[in-house]
Length: 428
Image: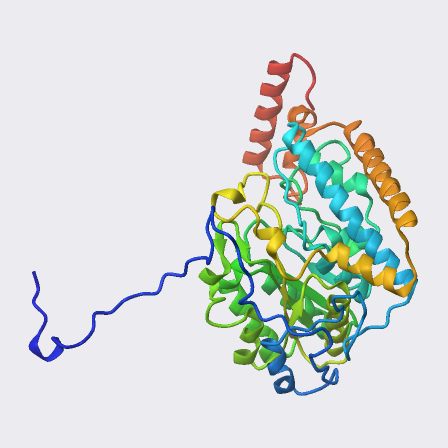
């Protein structure tokens, strides 16, 4: 055993801090320690303000909707009623879609699904605030981008089922959509990669003299990846026309946000070290999300540089269908979250404006449910995941090489022969 030298005998032993969530299963969650400033209290800098002017907003919280559903303060985007109603409908559609696909997974119709319950305002409002031609580089909880941009629900479901209607031919995991026409870059299961991709795409857009900008998405846990910092370095150095979103929903699978550094500083504060604009936004306030993304998109489009936005929200359900959140957090924690339900808050705003009522709300709920059910029925007519696998096996070798190498061709032919033998029919 090594003895401590005399000159160090009085020094305290070194120790590490291992972050632990405040509450565990069986505890009573209490979020009173979270500072929720009054709606409308955050100042709104000019779009072309110096980045330093936004730094106080990295620890503040941009909020527009107050407790009575009124839009207040300088960040109020003053949206027209039709836009508000569309956002509200899109958010509800996403929630109903999630519920149907979650059930489909539990019924064995697909292998995997991820819901965004409690986070619907973020993707829907962001899509509404940006130009339809702008490109998003999402993670797996931004299905609202596609819904808000009018992507067919049937096509989304076919991708989840990997059936004959799947435009990706079963080559992506369920919920990893991709559609260039709708500005939705292919989702990657390698978390963090979409950030440098978004910055690179934005830089290419600037090099070409284009007017389209990009928005990259990441979760709080993936901010610990090196890709996050590489992207911020390039974005800052070249003043890329990009918005970089951190969806801080408090949990990265079963690891709480403190393991990614949330105890030391807000995620928006990362912007300070890189010298770029930063905003911290109430992610359950659709109007605040819209206003922040609109501000950042105008800044990027007028060569004002990148903006890092932290959307402060809460993942109301499990990480995925493979996850049971009751194993690592209190059962009542989602209900205790102080920022409320984004759908209910936007409804309260429409009611306060006199632009909505409970009769129309109930009718719309039935209509959305019927629409999603009809889409599911149409998608399932083309097959569900367990029924896939042997039809058109040769297609797995397509769209990879311009000219198929001989050894790949041999593998293809062998796979087709084995499939024919197994099925007793032509599997080509």
